[in-house]
Image (tube, rainbow, N blue to C red; front, side):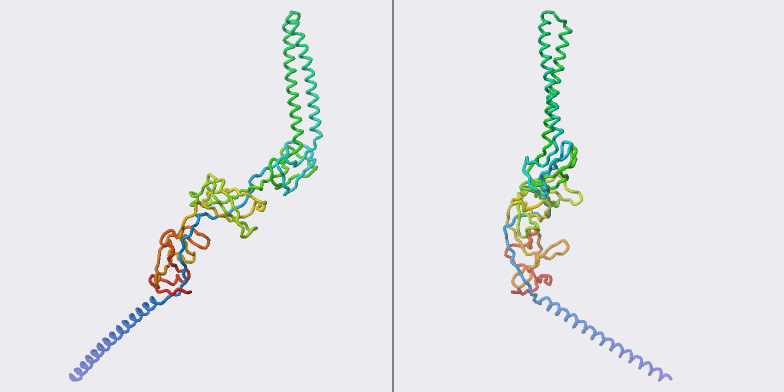
Length: 376
């Protein structure tokens, strides 16, 4: 019995030793596999890093460019006036229609003048009557004055004629004023254009009864136009009276028109945080029309040498901007500070010099130091 127990104990010990040896060998094999895997990955990463990336490039240029601000705006008449009646009466004629050109002083409308001509005649008759009364008063004053000197009339009688003469003089002045007023009202039966331009709107027709203040027509001046547009708050500091602008309209594709800044509004619009600006535009030939939508470029300074690259060369990473330059056969990452946009190009204010070669296609696959192949 004792011998059997000893035999079992020996077998158990042997099994434990075999288990330990097997576990040790397994651990060695696992470590070897791990080292092989890590080495392979490092070799793969190294191979990936050394993989050549095909790119297209562009040489940064220094160009003489004028700084500018872009906006959109609307053309407006340079001046607009509403022509109204100053009298009541029947509209005899209206001599213009919408779109009609007019010159300053041209007849626009005429009110039936019969009543106003009769009023002039009546005022003229009243004036003659008061002038006759004045003449009689003057003669009587002369007689009473001579008699008063000889003490043949009392002072009271003389004072009466003096007072009557003064009253008659006042009647004459009032009659003259009444005649002038009647003549002035008669002249207002003819209504003339206060400025040159075009008829924008007509509100009446011949035969209408109109009253004082009735809207007849509106006239707009179109040989000069105003171009109204807004500028963001950040660009307001660079604005000045007299700055040049160019603009385009959809009606004349490919053609640029010019103007000059004339008015800077005194306050910003609170909702948009922008400043309203008006430019004066000479409308040669009358081709431009009020209401046209415009795309505006306002030049804020003289031309200066500026380094530019295509917009496609830029990479944005949160608040930073970078480009990849090519130095030899390797990619070089460069952090840059951008300025204004000039069409398809962007100003590089810092971080890049003219004649440096930058990647414009394929830069999203690049890292610092990666080999590149410039596609031809």
